Image 1 (cartoon, one colour):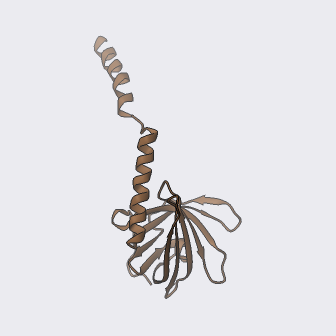
Image 2: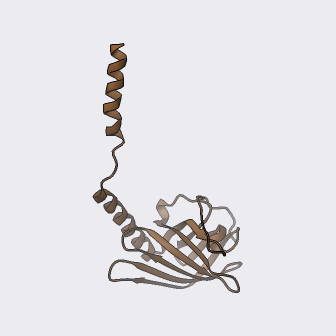
Image 3: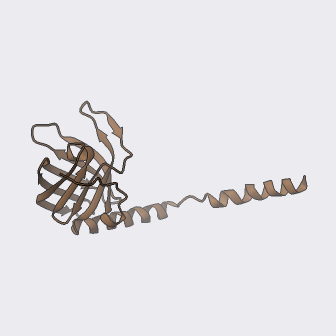
Length: 167
């Protein structure tokens, strides 16, 4: 009985130590590191955006949790898969325009136009100064603007599932 009591007491003492949470400074440093990596990837044209939520036509916000929906930039080629490209298929296109503006406070705005076989439109991507989270607006011809929120990560660190044979 004493052994059981000692084991239980040791567990009550040890388990809170294993579940240590990050301090505010550590969280801020991790967010800043993610932001810096995203800015570097944006300038290298080697990044992936995986949306975490989108706004429906009637204004409701729905969450997404699939690594099959993404927009990636690989040099002058752009790849999209899922709703972020306007269709469910995997699309490939060329960036006909690619402009990056950095604000004085560290926020970043990307404006790009894409033209592909089944994919046409313009993207406006805004990333705040202290994280890699961004807001995406996709303007498609003759269709409502698609609004999404997601994270920008370097292509090498992205966890995405790319279908074969993009169109």
